[in-house]
Length: 478
Ligand code: BES
Ligand code: ZN
Ligand code: ZN
Image (cartoon, rainbow, N blue to C red; front, side, top):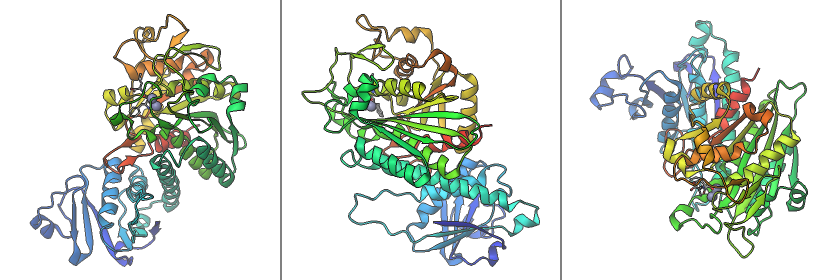
């Protein structure tokens, strides 16, 4: 898809279709016809006037995320036609309200389809979108600002779609070593370093919790360490991703209906890969390390068991009471590895960690947990800007007690059925060094990572949760 800004009046630009976003039907060029057809300009409502080659899409209020959604709706509507080019006006002359960025993202995210496994692929004809720029210049707008935003939106959307593709692929295709290979390719393309640790190296690193989770799999457990190191970075950030390429639950086997979709359990890892791709493409002045625990949780004679006691990389002992609470075991070791190898200013982890988080916040919102109020606030600003939804789940000392074990330092599950997203976060907290407490944030993306129905500009399946949010946050580091 080519998206450009043309320095001409809208009516002087040649394109097959004109797209108009309608905040209300008042004063629209085709107001009379639209009213006759009952178009009310409700959010994502569409009305295509074929005789005028104009598509109207309703937008409920002047908010960037509503425009993002409307742009996606426009693209999806037009995918039913055979037009190849589209033009539209500017809705935010200096991108002050982020509406220009939102529109570009909405087009690119909304155009995403995943048909790798369909024998008949949908043909997409629309390949050109032109924003009119003329009125901008007249109003003293800075087009170079918009050009910059265009590049950013392209990169962030492509990175999101890249993560979506990987998550949507089957566990047969994307197994741990495949994730490593994809990371290696990314490193080569974008000038990063990539280190892969196989099982022997992981043993050397005493990463036994992670190794036990992957023991019954026919695929080797691997740790991926991608590094993007620019000159004179403003800060160093470690991003840790849960990369369960499949989560059967292990011996605490998931019921059949809950197992369907568990290819999504690599979403944290794929988000990290997407972020690394974008950070390196944008050449951000921040050193970023992507550390991924790539593991498959299976059953078999060699499987780790409830009642096992595992010794994590930092020496803490963990009583396994449920092998389906495997993500926190993998992350525990990866967090230890990250803190030992990289002296970071910020440590974020991304994981489809608990069903409880989905119960708490719904399917569209990621849970964030950590000790730093400032960090939560700055992430909140990035969430507002990108339209990603986050909700802070608070730690407390009572929930912490629910992880007590009589046989080891800590149990891998809570002894009470409530607060499961927070107790999972508190489990991870045990593997964060004292001096790093304020630097750490845990993202439980179990809800939005993968939803089996389209929502806004997100399709059925993987959404790429975490990518745009983190990219915005990294871009605003000073
Ligand atoms: N990968 C799952 C969490 C999950 C559930 C992600 C639904 C996305 C959608 C995780 O490994 C898991 O199984 N967690 C258990 C923890 C429990 C055993 C304490 C869960 O949430 O039920
Ligand atoms: Zn699990
Ligand atoms: Zn899992």
